[in-house]
Image (cartoon, rainbow, N blue to C red; front, side):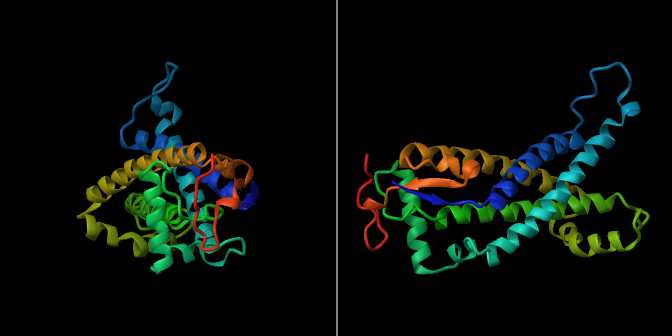
Length: 241
């Protein structure tokens, strides 16, 4: 077995920041859309600014998502560790690898004809979908935020609402107004929740079936690969028990 590095400390930090922020965003977002709790003490919720704190927490994690989205976009193109964009290019090699990983999943590892040492096209496409959904959530969320700035200005000047209108007003046209944007934002949240459930399941699945310690990638950054079962074409001839 060969130990290989799959995630750098920066990549793991971004991963867990996104995970924590997503939990906070879902909890606070659900409350903003439909307040489902008030308080465990007798004072009215309005006196403790429950909605204000939820909106503040939601906005802060959205800012963190903005920053990590920029970092992830940069790493996709310019990372010296790996360049994920190469795995989503429409090449024959990527298409074959994508199909082989998919067949590996649906056949419960009875067919494994790809090198699992590196990130594969299937997983990269899966994560690319997540990042696209995340950017969509940010744009629709910022449109709802700027909708509340009816005066056309903010505490830091009129330039901030102007930028938000410029970058997000297209969502009003696409989804038929503010209510349509809200529905699209909430729908994307549920899609992201399903994505997270699928992601966790697949990582556990790979750990159990491949026996290469994939679950350790997000904790220690490394996994194990049995290089003896990979032939010169990068195909795994047998799973190896």
